[in-house]
Length: 408
Ligand SMILES: *Cc1c(COP(=O)(O)O)cnc(C)c1O
Image (cartoon, rainbow, N blue to C red; front, side, top):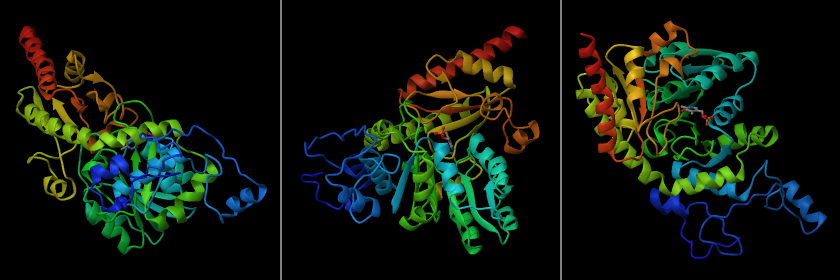
């Protein structure tokens, strides 16, 4: 591998530059674009070389379940951006979450997690971990006293998302990290919603950050992927062997897609964040919208914490249509640019009705506790012209008034 002219320590470069150049491993052909190493294995000149590499006495790749040059570039670039000592890529966001938690926990341990979790994350905490003897307590993430009260001598780690899905509540990451650290426990933050551009959980005190790279990191709706980041020691002690031996590895092809996506991540998220802020203001003023939730707005319940720990309001907006499920469906169905999909972070704007999709498996009282009403819609703002998006939302919301007056 040669790296012509890329001689500066990438840690001295600004984030956008790291995302274009960081972690690049050039082959002997000195290609400009990162190479896709679609290979399972690697050859050794002599048997003694294989022996040395297996013993760890010589650097080099052994098998793509363990490491692959393209996946490695993606991991290095992510670690550089996040300011992490090490990163490991996984096949999906859920593989990252599961490994980040399982890698730290054993039978007899205890985990505290915020209640407002992505559905599959809730399954891991509430159902999977207890099957292996790990006790779990779910708390209201925004209530620091609830975190304190949930701690036990066996508490090993805490887990949260912020902003939460779909109600975009903001949890004070630094404060929760402090509570957990005092008890000798670690904090894992699922940073999928904020994206790596708008929030840096490690800098706020978290020990581990996980991503569904499926979301903003790919950002164009193509491949699934995940990343686990932490200090070199955290990854070595908790994650490295689990991933090597159990094999939820990211395919080199998907890593290559993600790697190229990182080059444009700052541009994409900045634009989506600006558009989301404008759309949130538009929705808040619309007569057919009962409530708008956006962490960048002054009326957000945790506005001060959002301002402290996020550098933008995010790319998602939640809002409640006046009425209920029927009205929310009517608005979503009347949209012509925004697509109906449960995905997020895509270049294409997407809208979902959480009550009947992402959160339909919850009991009604669980949804009520999370503040998910029948009229709620979650909008993931894409890269279309914001004025086209506002026009699309406006005509869909206005169609409600037309229906109402026709019924009167
Ligand atoms: C999508 C998502 C996940 C799961 O990621 P996959 O890539 O779909 O496995 C986990 N947490 C959050 C907050 C998500 O949005």
